[in-house]
Structures are given as structure tokens and as C-alpha cells.
Length: 192
Image (tube, rainbow, N blue to C red; front, side, top):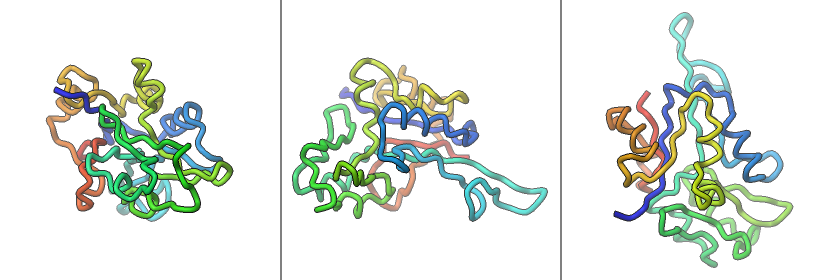
């Protein structure tokens, strides 16, 4: 069976500490003010506010990154093929081939809003599942930094991988972000 990298986020364990975002910034150096890993608050209308009314309030967090979709719309619109899928399923962006401001088509078609424009370098940038670490046999920076063990990464086709075991512990009860977009993402979330 072929290698298919993916991720599972247990939203029941995530406390919104932003360790994953910080680790991503340190590892991948996104443009100032941008991040390839954003932790969204699911709750009230403002960041870090709960939903509901006292005393029945609830707040959860949803780490959001490139979904490395199996049917990625960004791949279909890139005129230079700067965006491509590796044999292991990771969607990567070759900055040397990117037209940057002159195009930005990938940004407009990504339903998750996770492709960032680096104005200083005039290129688009996104999460690459830390390919530099994965190719060295390591996990992603965000998964390694998660002190509450809410982020799991690995080969979805390997039943013994961290990600597969985490999905199994969740009883297979997972969801994807934006299922209505029909992009077949490989980032899964617990149903929480």
C-alpha cells in the first residue's frame, strides 16, 4: 500500500495554547504576521470567547493548516505547476516557480484560506507538513510541540502509525473541515 501522510487533531484535548503555531513559525519562518498553523476558537463571536450563556458555556479550539487535499483545487489552477503533490500525498509549493502577486489563483480557490502571500518575497507560501522534517524521519513541528498530545501525524495507510492509532482510539469518529467543498482533505478532527 502506498504512503499517504495525514494528520488527526483531537479537539477534545486542544486547549488553544498556540504551541503548535509557535513551533510552526520557528520551523518554517512564515512571513511576518502570517502563520501556516492557525488555532481558531470555536465558541463566541470573538477570539477566545465561549458560546452559550453562563453557566452553560463551551469553548473549543481548532488548529487549522493546509488540508493537503486529495482533490486540491489549488493544484488545478496553478499555471506554472508551482503547486504539486508528492508521492506521499503531501501538497507542496515550489516558490521558485510561483508567480506570486501576479497570479494568486491558489489563494482564491482554497476553501480553507490557508495559502499565504509573502509580500517581501513575492511568493505564495503554505504548510508543507514540514517536509524537511518528514524526509529526515521526524514528525511535524506542530505535532512534536503539542504538549497535550492533540496533534498526530503519520502514514494514514499504516495501522501502526501515530495518526492511525489516534484515529482508532477516537473510535473512527472523525470529521473533516468543510466537507461540502468535496476536496477530500487528509487532516481529520475528532467529533467534539
